[in-house]
Image (cartoon, rainbow, N blue to C red):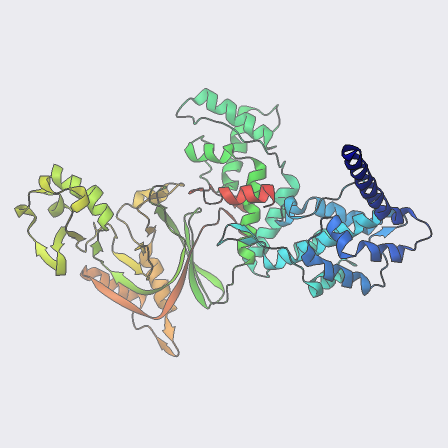
Length: 526
């Protein structure tokens, strides 16, 4: 008997649930109920949640339609209007604006036209907010909660009455020139590229030239750079174009950096572009002057008075000695600096070299010190008995043209003991893939950078007395000389794998794999 009761309760419950679900949607096809009332019912918190619209959007959506007396704005009778279809097309390819599809609610074709309208308006309100405020929490490596800007949505809506949604959405975000270049070029890239999810496995020409060419050609065909019929010269030219698009030396050769770039899917690349755009949305450049370094592109930029004054190639840390991202202020420029060798380098590199050659310190113009800066005679030490983990000395390289820091160092406080400096190894700047240091940033043409910084260094009406000519004079002395800046220069060391300028967009390799987890989050939507 108990079993029959349980079965009865079970059937009754699910029968009622099914009837409830049917009755909830029944009003949408009831001709006796006005469109206005239908919209009001859809805009109830329960129904909006049923449509998977985030609760943070509920109040704003209801207010949007209340201001329009609950009349549809995207649909006519039983179909989406021309404007509604236009919005749907724009949002179906929201990645072009740097917003991944997983951020929005998908429009189920089975939905009633009024339900489709509300989902589209919910997506529009969300994308408007994200485009203007950003949607990635970079510090905690997760997506920000969804939100809505009611006044911003109304402005966008009014603008869309005379312009297409693509144009209006593309105009959202910062007015900053860098963002505008990125937004325009990224839109064009996503609008014209074949965004496949396929990754590739390739070898370099050094490993196997014939196999490398065959795999490279197949990859470029898949990425829609060439057709199946392309001859070898066309393939090489397409490879050079691909290299230019990826910030590589456009030599048409299949080297290690080119193999890494070719291996990545176009979809993953587009998501890295979305990450870069969101970084720019959240950036605040309101400073009179500053230095900005981008690790993946190996570049340093000095800005003053809202314009780029100096641009330099840099060398950054190896994967095993990564250059950190940071914010600080450059307060001193050091002519002919001393180099206090970090303890890790002293233990792992200097000590083994000393054990192999007692003249290593003298040859490299280095001195060693005990505590309280007491200099020690290296000839009186049995280096073979010194262990790596108990190395008790401080190693300091003396100023000179062969000093590892070169002849100019830019000093700024930071917990990582890194700085920007010159280097005696100038030849490395000719490489397109410049990841060779222990973490510091080696700068090409550092004297030129120092002169520009001094030119714009002032405090009130007082200018720095050290000019370009006087800096040259100081450098001829070849002695250590610190120059304190009157006005410290903010420095931002950043990690942005996709950048753009007036000419185009460039996809750099994710050097330290710092965006891998974010790409996965954007793919999954959480």
